[in-house]
Length: 629
Image (cartoon, rainbow, N blue to C red):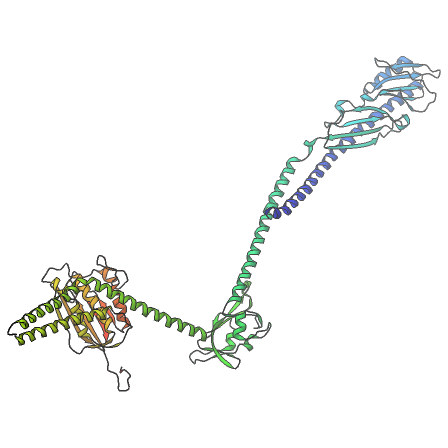
């Protein structure tokens, strides 16, 4: 996939690199061509001047010969005339009889050519070699073409120059200057004709360049820059495509969220015409057509006088605006309660693009919320009942030794009374009155044991909460009876102020559980108090429509940190404690319509702690069965 995405960019880079390379090579070729053309023009002009100089010497010698000067004088003139022109190697004067006298000759001599009569200027060609002769009226001027272009007159660039014989002379190669060309990456050629009428020699120029003449540095820079540029463009293009794909995905997700929302969502243009509506909006507002005027379709009306609705201002709002509480939507001839809001949709520079209406029916929602709240409260009450039952079992487990001792006392008394009654009845003269007293004692101890077991069963039994009249002093006495063994073992003095008739509206089991937890905490706190100073004070007094029970001990008390976290779960100062007793007791008290407070030392004392349980007083129902306030 990545190779497939990279292939177009690679091809584009190759094409761009090739076009740039072609342009750079063409520019270099044009530069080299311009330099080559300049060199060829210079060489052509130099050779043309050489030809003109040779013809000038021919004309001068011809004129001197026509004046009839002696050969010695003519030879002197020839020496002077040819000295600047090294390509002129010989001069001959030929008579009509066919004999030629040599006025100037090279050491190797001159070729022997027959003279053709005639006075016009022309060229004479030996069978081979670079020499040729210009002749006119019997005067011959020999030229060595190999000396026409000495090395000092050649350009610095290695140009190969080839001079050919004219076509009338066969067109064979006359002379070549420069080394033969080697392997070339670029070859430049030009062909011209020397510009004299007597010596119209074809001349060819050739220059070759190796691979080093190509602009490799520029090509490398171009290829690198184009590669980097296209790589950056590819990365930008890929990032743009990814951004566009992400934007499309985001739009699809947003569209899916809008379509899946259970709230009705309607998008309108600035004039209130429907642009889009999700399925929930069709269900709440009815079937909406695109372009339909929404304010005329959604008939909102306020039902509460304290929350009026100005529909005109609502639909023209330029800021987000919510429907007031109690708004009704008239639909299909009846009204349904709804809630929602209208918010403007703005584009760049704050331009208003339209508005978004969100609306939901609150009737079914309220019913579901109430049902869920009822179910949650039921579960909370059930969990509180289970936790309270577990707390009672835990407390009774901690009191098992004391309860066993408390039950052992009436059982031991039962055994003693039974044995005494048996002895009295087995005598020959039974003492019936005393035996009756023993039986009465047995009955009293049995009732005492049954009372203890009944209280234990009441605490252990898991029953639903029952709000009824509870005799609070009796409930305290029941708890003291259960704790009698622990009170005796710790040598705790109990001071109870419990006025009779103090009744509260509560659940008896939960009340006894709260009191039991407070007394047990007080006994645990006084373990470190010296014997004789351990005192448990229980005070019951009215407080407005409530009764307040204060449980006070003479333990070490609580510091500020412990008091701050007193009623928080899992906060305890007892080793091995769970820290749930006071939390559960406070929860039970609040569930009964009261509250639990305290923890600070009693007024006027520096140690100890006091906890106050407040419960609503019992109020007798009126004759019709409704409770009085």
